Every structure is written in C-alpha cells, then in structure tokens.
Length: 227
Length: 127
Image (cartoon, each protein chain N blue to C red):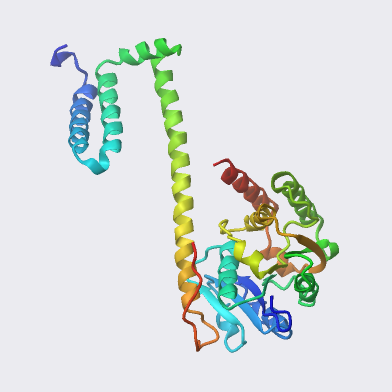
C-alpha cells in the first residue's frame, strides 16, 4: 500500500436520489478527491445533477440494484488503482467526517475491512420499528453468516485494495449487505467495527427498507443458500 | 378395441399425442437434442397410453401403494411443477447475473463524468 499518498475512492450508489446526491457528493468531495457515483438507472436527473461536480459518474443504463451498483463502483475504483475503497450511502444519512475513522485503521495496517456501526455510534432520530428491524438483521447475520457485528446493514464500510478485489457482489439488490459480510468471513479478512453517526430524515426513511422488504430479503438469502 | 369405443376426448387428443410422439422420435435422430427428445418421447407415450387406457394409472398407482390413479397423476404433477419452478428460478438468476454484467461493462466503458477521459483504456470486467 502506498502510505504517503493513498488513493481513497468513495463509492456512492444512487437510484433516484436527485434531491440529495449533489450535496452528499460535494460534502465528500471536500475531503476526498475520488468520489465515484454509480447512477443505477435512475429515472430522475440524478446523473445530470453531478455535471461539473468533479466526481466520477458511472451510469447503469437499467436499474440493477444497490449491490450491483456498488460492485460496479468497486471495479472502477480498482481499475483506477485505488488503495482503499469506501462505500457511502446517497441519501444523506451518513456523516462524511466518519470516513476518516474508517480509513485510518486500514492505512495503519491494523485490519483489511472496517464496518460502520450506528449502534456503537449514534443513530439520530431512529424510529423504533427501524431499530428492531436492524437488530433482527444483526441476529440473522449472527445465525446465518456467523459474523459477529453490532450493525450488519450499515452502508458505510471501507476495504483495503486486496479485500475490495476479493469482494464479488452477486446479490444485485439489497441482500448484498449480508453477502459482503459472508465474503469477508470466508476470505478471512480482519475487520473492525467503527462507531458512526446515522442521521435519519423523512427522506432517508422513505428510501430505506420497509420491514416487509427486509423479510423478503431474508427469505431470498435463505433460498439462495438452499440452492 | 375398436374406433367406436373411443370417446370424443380420446378421438381428438390421441392423434395429437401420436403426432407429438412421432415428432420426438424424429428428433431423436438429431444428436444435439437427444436427451430432451428421449424425455419427450417417454412423456407423450405415457400420455397416449393413459388417455387410451385410463386404467393403467390405477395399475401403476396400486403397484406404488397409492390408492387412486388420479392421485398418482397429481403427485407426478406436483413434483414436475416444483422441479420446473426451481429450474426457472435458477435460469432467472443466471440471466440476471448476465444482465448485470452487461450493464456494468457499458457503465465502466463510458463514464458520464468527468466528461473527457484522458487515458481510459482498460477497465476491469472480470465476471
């Protein structure tokens, strides 16, 4: 790893996020020069909002899901010789200042992967139903992925280059969060959870997963395992 | 059994099934579709026999310890349906993966921003 001047790539998967994408991207760009936004076949003007922003913008011509979009961003970052790949949500619920804390342990060679945890940090304005759902996700992950984390479905993560190169997200849609954890365990990457802040807004809640969807995702993962 | 003993259903369906059976036999001659042709030939033959002689399902059912012939047919259909569902689910997953690979490939080839790429030659598309 080139320690003096590491290339940090921040990947943002965006689907119909024209309301927030520019401000989120600009905030991250203030500290990190390489931001990759993957417009996942948005029907709004998400991509157009980023004209002249300085971010790398990739465009999925049809919607393939967040997992697929993140994988595209990871492929791009690796082809651009990224040393560290960070995933970041497009809906404005992450705090760009948390990126530094995620990247640091990897740069220091302490681990290969860092995972943001809102339950170690602060989940501002989190509704009870969302909290219960996420806790259920954590339990599900402990049982089926056998990965002990306090927050299994946090979009803020960082990977060393070699860890990022080993990740192959095949669950195109929302099941990718569990899949990434599975692959971290199977590949044996050392990981650490980092406290991060999540800011819930009406907007981010509307864009998030409903509880019913979460159950569907769980079933999908189990079915895929059975096959 | 004479022609007169056949009911209308049998008169209409049996020639059809016979034609399909003959077709699958012809397909047997083609090397590339042999396995599918064998399965279809067996299927049409079984269909023809059970339509002409409904009693055969009862016979087979008794041998297998299932009470009624219709139950036997029902069980076979349930199994066939589940197999087909799994088969198509698998097919769908493969198609989706292929679709994503194509979408990713074009996305990596043609970034929207920044507008002019200086030295973009190679992109990673290992799928």
